[in-house]
Amino acid sequence: MGDQNAITCKETFQLVKENKLWIGITNGGNKWFEVPMDYDIKTKFHIKEKNGKKYFKKRSVY
Image 1 (cartoon, one colour):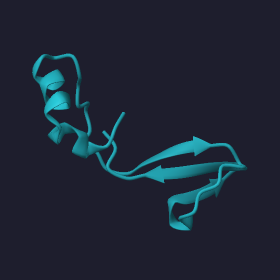
Image 2 (image 1 turned 90 degrees about the vertical axis):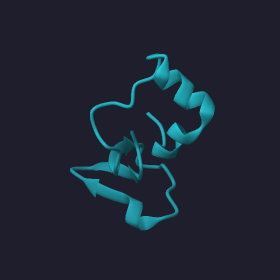
Image 3 (image 1 turned 180 degrees about the horizontal axis):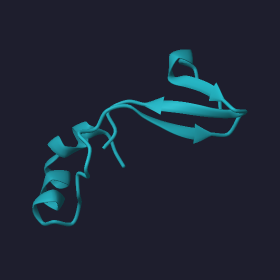
Image 4 (image 1 turned 45 degrees about the vertical axis):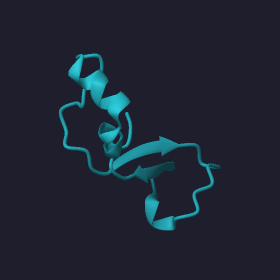
């Protein structure tokens, strides 16, 4: 996993060309990751709590 802009780095792009790194099946976008309840997130619009679990939204993830 990584930021979609990483593909613009020549070192990263070379790994893609050599078939050592794969972009995956999505076009990137926002992904939600479960985090510990005490995980401090400054931007409140990047978090949500559901069924007693806390989630963090990371943008531009491949």
